[in-house]
Image (cartoon, rainbow, N blue to C red; front, side, top):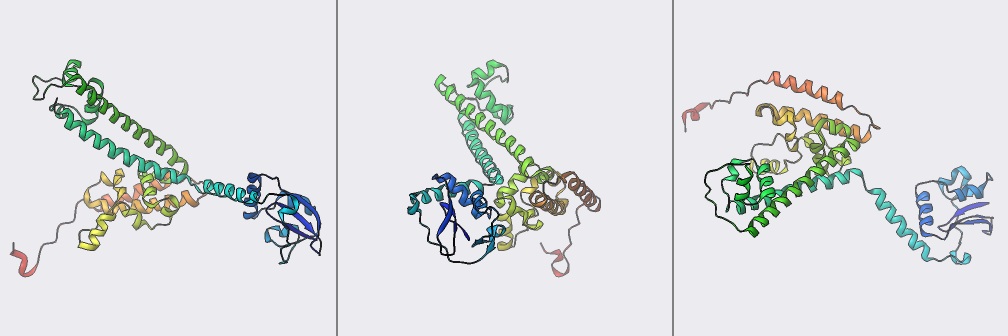
Length: 353
């Protein structure tokens, strides 16, 4: 006997391809799609197990080898019309299967990529709006810019509006202003713009918080070592964790410095020592002559961290990597406490200006 499965059912046939037993799938595109996906994944369907019932069978597919002997016999001509099955079900089932595959192919790190790019967009928007607010409000109160920090500047305008209301609040004090008086409508418009800037800033902070939480879930070792935002930016620059995990440490070190690298290759400018990992405290808080060496060590450890996150079966070794990194950084700082002296010119050109 032969066991054969089509898109609409499972059949047992004799040597003359006559149908002895059958189990038809439900006439539902979603159910058919599930079975097609299971078959594609190499799984045995319940209908196939039920019909075989431990009896010796001949099968055409290797996935069914547990149910019988695999033999490459010709596919029997079993038509859905013979069982009053609408052929359009197959098209609907394939569409459903395609939708499920697209959903399944979406990776968690793709959301991180979109989130970090959203932060970049919100930062640009907030900066542009803030520049416009400064130019506009300086017509009324030009001295305010030098009197308060940027964050406080926007908050004061959002809360009070024009110069008179800000001075009445007692938050700032000035004897006389060079700014012109504005109408109530002008003040409300500037106040609304400032409030919108604060909304953008709050949204940016909310997404940063979201990135921090998600990065700890999908890339805990990278997050522990690089911080959530630097780690997320590395993932964004490469397009995903899988791609990042396959890069050598020298490439990770320069991610985000592509323009400087191309300028070095094209115009023989000084080569870059680091890309976005410059935002890591170990680098940007170190003296300039130590940064390149620290960046090299940090990139190597980040490469190890992302590989463990991708292929380490959930192992968390962030503290161990951090301890090894701190040890190497301390060695670099002891070995290079001062910058190297510049080489003096030699020969005929020594005294030339």
